[in-house]
Length: 425
Ligand SMILES: Cc1cc2nc3c(=O)[nH]c(=O)nc-3n(C[C@H](O)[C@H](O)[C@H](O)COP(=O)(O)OP(=O)(O)OC[C@H]3O[C@@H](n4cnc5c(N)ncnc54)[C@H](O)[C@@H]3O)c2cc1C
Image (cartoon, rainbow, N blue to C red; front, side):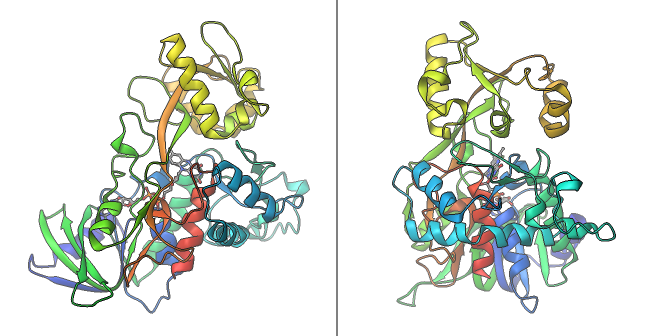
């Protein structure tokens, strides 16, 4: 269904209409669409998006999705790396449960048609020339290494993983006759039955920006998948829909919130004017180095033995300290020592975006600074997305499962969206 068709559907409602749906999903990012596609097709599902469908963090994600996929990797190692990055504040049971489902989650994305980057043909297992889909098995995916991970563990689709994932899932959602997607429909408040001693969520009050009117949705279940709150900060990587609506609505409905003080700052946002463009960690994973622009010193060597591949909080703090000292507002990320062809092939989006801004990354350093990136806390749920309010579920960045503790391990969030979204179903 096109956005225009979706809008047409809504245009037929009267302003006094109460709209019935089996499941109301607030948010059309990866958590929302994974939930919608995993729910039984016998259910009538409505998915709301506050703005256009592509305006969500999921669409912007570059690096990839972490899962223990390499034959030399173990889920236990992924869990150990996650617990270390989380600084002792992860919920161990939920962490183990979510990461153990990593391989199945990535396989599910393959089956939805996500064009993950593959290893070279000659290295692939069970490659069947007659059936290109046979190559889309997790053992054939190219994996990158990101900060805090002990090995290559991040499946990706070039350097625009989120866009490719969301395009594939959007095709599926639009083809599903039981799913209605309503862009520019903003949930304002959750409807709860306060007569019930165990509060029950029964729908939401929604503002239809197309027709400038309020609508009431009644549903058997509501799934909050409304993303994070990065845009509460001055420099943020997330789009402007991410202002914490879900956290606020869940709190008003009676849910517990946790760990909202733990905001992850990505070390390398592009430090040009008010740009929100992110320079993926994968660039450092492939050998990118950080230098002080004034002294030319590779400062991470003195900060941590993992240098540029230390966890994000350590790199972000080190860059912030350099910026405090140099007064320039940025440090340099340099990849010009890597082969130009490799950079253009593996990082086409970053290469092209920066080239258009006058920076040729094959020859010049990139000015970078920390940027608000991820909310580690949120609405308290278990690994199945169950909240404190009956009938209300939460998945993705709006939720707090405890997977991220005080600091998210890179690329664990896309995985959490898919795993918890599918668990809710
Ligand atoms: C630039 C960038 C790069 C990233 N790279 C990676 C990466 O490589 N790997 C990784 O694992 N993670 C990455 N992340 C984090 C990850 O992308 C997000 O945590 C994840 O995509 C969140 O998905 P979500 O479905 O919870 O929310 P989102 O994808 O942000 O979707 C939120 C949805 O909720 C809707 N919404 C919000 N409020 C309302 C409302 N009141 N009513 C109706 N709808 C509403 C929005 O319109 C949107 O549709 C990155 C984040 C950014 C910003």
